[in-house]
Image 1 (spheres, rainbow, N blue to C red):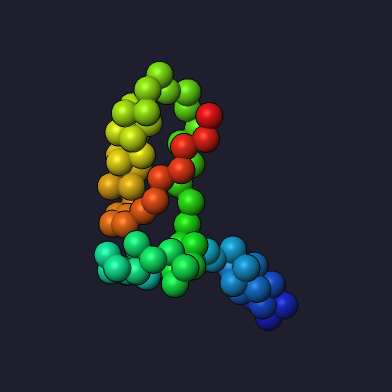
Image 2 (image 1 turned 90 degrees about the horizontal axis):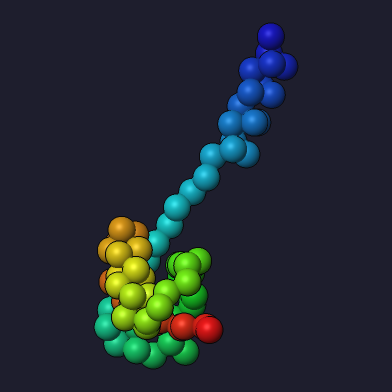
Length: 75
């Protein structure tokens, strides 16, 4: 019984995920040399215009609570 409990606790420990975020100010966001990459948001869709892609990115960043970000469009 003790071995089963230990196995369960070990499995639980490895299955727990963590989420972390730091808040940066506008100056840090402008100077990306001082800021590490905090995350990437992918939008995997084909858009007709850059404005449509920008709107979709704004929806994603609002949903994730991102305040400062730099958009890179790859065609």
